[in-house]
Length: 478
Image 1 (cartoon, rainbow, N blue to C red):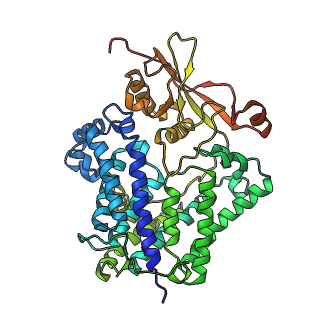
Image 2 (cartoon, helix red, strand yellow):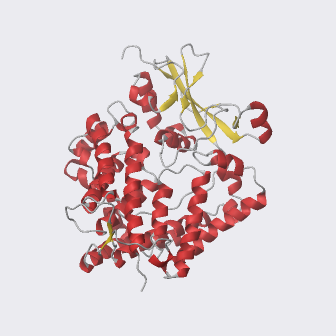
Image 3 (cartoon, rainbow, N blue to C red):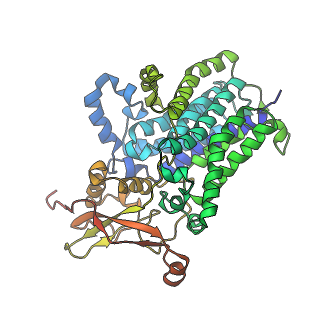
């Protein structure tokens, strides 16, 4: 019988580390995104929802911020989350600390609207909920130790890994994108992904044969390899190596927040003890929960995971729709979720550029910290940190202004000279003062060539601007 003592330790510590990174990343953006003078104020949102939902407000939007949602509370929640995740990593009352992390992060996600709606936010909450069954609810301190995960609960971790990887492959084929089917999608991926890095710029120059081989390898890892994680022994170890390879390649070529950190921990969960390079397990404690509790976790979580896997494969089937009311009941708590990144490959790169003017003739550009604006701005390496405004600007550029009315709030906060929102930007051409006019224009961006980088020092090139939004004028009386 294979044991997974070391895997149990790795999964527990990776989750704690991912929580810490998530709260740390959020802490430096939280007021600009969600504060009283932020783009999408949580306090303002909850005041509206309180009037509309009344007594059912917590069921639809489970959040601790119903009790308090001021700027100090938001900042303190990030700090407490960082402290709790650190204590969980150090082995101090692991389950209590992870429960606190889960409640705090769920509180943010329930109220974060577009800025906290990414798949890795759901993945963190889903794995975080499973982790509440890793260890007993006890007050103790076992420095850097972790409990052995019950085999049934570890099975749930494997099912989550399978769902994440297999669904990511299936959705690419189910959406009938010809570029995925003919293996040419990576011709576009490196330069159209939300936040490329310098290696993505390099790989974009690779031959079409290399791009097709890379795409074929990705499909093999996402569609075939996941089935072998359930086969104990050398086969699951080899499957884990392939899954590790895919994650490392994603890390090297893009900025996807803490998604890869979480996924690496999931991949490690399938490696049995004999395949680790070290053998000491003195820091592994006995199985943390009883079989009865493990069965309860299985009953709650397994049907939802199987439902989403089935719906991903048989998208048009209605045979399991009787489960939808139950899934809708669980959805606000995000303990079981669908996954699938880049179902349709974007083949152009529209970018929204924010401009301000005092006379309506000369327009100056605001510069974002990580998304392309200046052509000479080298792509950055920022993961596992996620600049959420930069990310959301990428999504907004793919849609119309009317589908992204939160941009009006961004304009309003810049007219108000909100220091919290200005902190989210890299460069303000008006030095923190409000211009009289603001507008959004849209360009199509492309990676530059080797010759253009060498001669002009540009990483990007772009076409002519097109209007994206109306021109906004500052109200001098307000």
